[in-house]
Image (cartoon, rainbow, N blue to C red):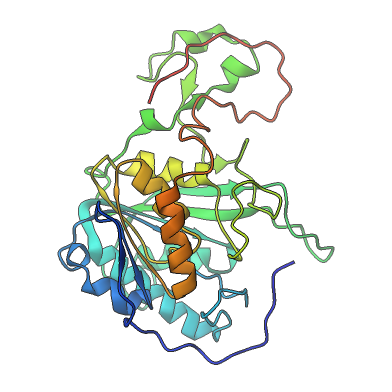
Length: 313
């Protein structure tokens, strides 16, 4: 069950803490993203290549200093404000990926498509409406058990966006499950037996990060799997690019971006969470990079498997 706390006054955002920066320029600012991120030159000059955001869901979760039970209209205003900030920070070739539940997914899509009364800083193109699927949903009996979060993938320019499909390939079900040799001679430009992942994301190490998971950071209420962020960072940015996360949280984006040779920029409202995330970024990933590459996500029992060469990334 979600950790519940009594309603508390909103903590005053501040920028009084010194930035946390390593020798490579990876930086976490402490404070409200709407106030501290505009101080970064890369944001001011629209030099960000990829934004990943996993914002507070407004579910009254325990996020240390953050008040996670805003009135609905206040939460939507907050959402559109940080989206505008991030959209302005992007290069024309940049992309934005947002991790969001059912509650607000439709509003964000409509906003970024320019379909609401309030217009976005930049109307953006939807590349994919993906789903992150997990099998450990919170039990309920009044409706179907939730087992997903939406992964909204937008870009500034669909013809110029950074897109690296060969960095995130997985074995095709034709190769791993059905023994269909046609996959070995296909002509789609991908290696034999491999495919671009589907728009529902699941598989080994893709589940929710619970208390007994080796990736789990006990001091933080919520975090995403490392394989999730590795897929996002690999497919939508290049080594040397700048990756921005306005809600650094436990530091999953930071640790993956830094260890894939990107420059990470982030903000975190809680000073304690920011320091732990910064240390996690320096310590490196829990699992080896590439864990989900060459791994089948098939949920069907194998009938006949083909031997296919593993790809190198």
